[in-house]
Image 1 (cartoon, rainbow, N blue to C red):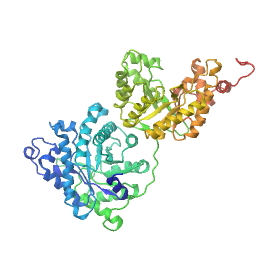
Image 2 (cartoon, one colour):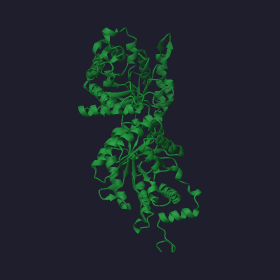
Image 3 (cartoon, helix red, strand yellow):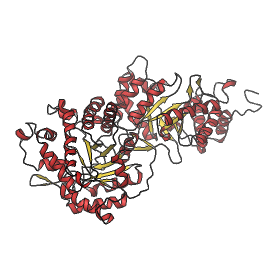
Image 4 (tube, rainbow, N blue to C red):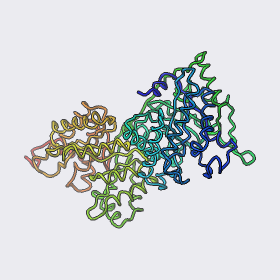
Amino acid sequence: MSKFLDFVDSQVLLLDGAMGTQIQGADLEVEKDYWGQENCSEILNLSRPDFIRNVHMKYFAAGSDAVETNTFGGSTLTLEEFGLGEKTIEINRRACELAHEAIAEFSHDGRPRFVIGAIGPGTKLPSLGHIDYDALETAFAVQAEGLIQGKADAFLVETAQDPLQVKAAVNGAKLAMEKSGIILPIMVQVTVETTGTLLVGSDIAAAATVIEALGVDVMGLNCATGPQEMADHVRWLSKNWPRRISVLPNAGLPEMHQGHVHFPLSPDEMARWLERFLKEDGINIVGGCCGTNENHIASINAMLERQEGGKRRPLPVARTHHWIPAVASLFQQVELRQDNAILSIGERCNANGSKKFREAQDREDWDTCLDMAKEQIREGSHTLDICTAFVGRDEIHDMSAMLSRLRGSVTAPLVIDSTELPVLESALKLYGGKAIINSINFEDGEEPAHKRMKLAKKYGAAVIALTIDEQGMAKDVDRKLEIAHRLYKFCCVDYGLPPSDLMIDPLTFTICTGNEDDRQLGLWTLDAIERIHKELPDIQIILGLSNISFGLNPAARHVLNSVYLDHAQKRGMTGAIIHVSKIMPLHKIPAHEVAAAEDLIFDRRSPKSDAA
């Protein structure tokens, strides 16, 4: 645990107000102070260190426990727009040093104070195709390296507008920490517009689902709106988010007054709003964003001191939260455990399973492929399995073509289905949601599984894991259970994947061959589902359902699939890869057809059966 997080856990932390307000309100000259780089606030770390240091000192004097570095636009990509890319490390390092110099001026009072390395979103959003993931991650990694060299106490990825940009920033920070051997806390603050979503359309639940999977220490809100417009989103975080929360609003919604931007909220009004969040929502970190200054921070500080009746910070208010394991598209969250139903994974966007999709893919008719995805959502699929493996075609090209269209067009989260590691990684670099990787197994030992789990942890994905090991596919109950436990240890113990993100497929095989050895395969899978559910209750259990009926005519397949699904769900299965519109409720299937399907599933034989 870092000293910074120790502080946050023991008392409410007061961050600073806006840096931009101070800079824009100052009488600074483009050539002298900005070195000719108009609107590049970060150059002031080098050209006017006295000014930046003084801003930090004003906030500390007003009561701040921590200040954010003047590095909002400090990534290599943003600085390159001003021809300053080669100065990225220097600018970020110096920004931290200036904040530490300000802290030194207050060392006499013995209070702990912190330097927070600010990482803004930059000017290009990857989910909108403005920039590729690798370039963004690299730029953030260089910025984070400079912040580490300057001895930042934590990273703050702030004003985030795109979950894919958040992934790049968080992973860039992790790369820099790995390089330096220094571990710092990571905070993420998203910006929710007056529309109720991030700029790319993500709601707060989708954003939180993605961010939680990245393992960050603090999530919060900043910028875009004032505290009133943030209230519903703060409340959602309070009720759901499992870790620490920060709230840094603007001083109200910006207004135009005589050609100038004006923020209407007074210091006392801001303090009252944050007091409400403090008491009702249990937030851990408060401060201000655009339009706030040292007067706002002084009012918030006075409010905090009143909570305990003296000059000390109040303890964070205890709150009760309920985090629901989920995956997410760019737009919305989908719970992994559906009430009174299974998680349905649409199977038709698969070049190996759908002739229509394969032919559309082969002629690069992406509109038809997209229409097939949307049709499955209309039919009730919660998520979509996407597989573009097609002999003779470039799988990376085709998967990228699909993902770049699907990510902004469908609300269902995606299951990235490929046996090829480069295909999985290229897809995850395009996807801002929390995806599911399909799949891992131990057929070729653990090395391929290691590589896939590293991808899952880096990009915050859930994982489908098959009960296959070096001896082959598990068929009987004991073998399925043995490999399931091995998968659990490998994914959840060794790699720290939350058990709820592990989706074990105990495999089912066709029971329609007529071969004696195949008759009980479906029953063994049902028994294995029941055992796995009992012994590993927190994981998900899924099936590629249509395998059970392979070899039958379509009408018979629909019946057998529907009946088997019902039994599997009753045994503990939580999800299935299916064609939803072909699944029928049992009460709509004639009783004699249900009985015939159950005779097949449970290997019931009568004197008139084929085995008599």
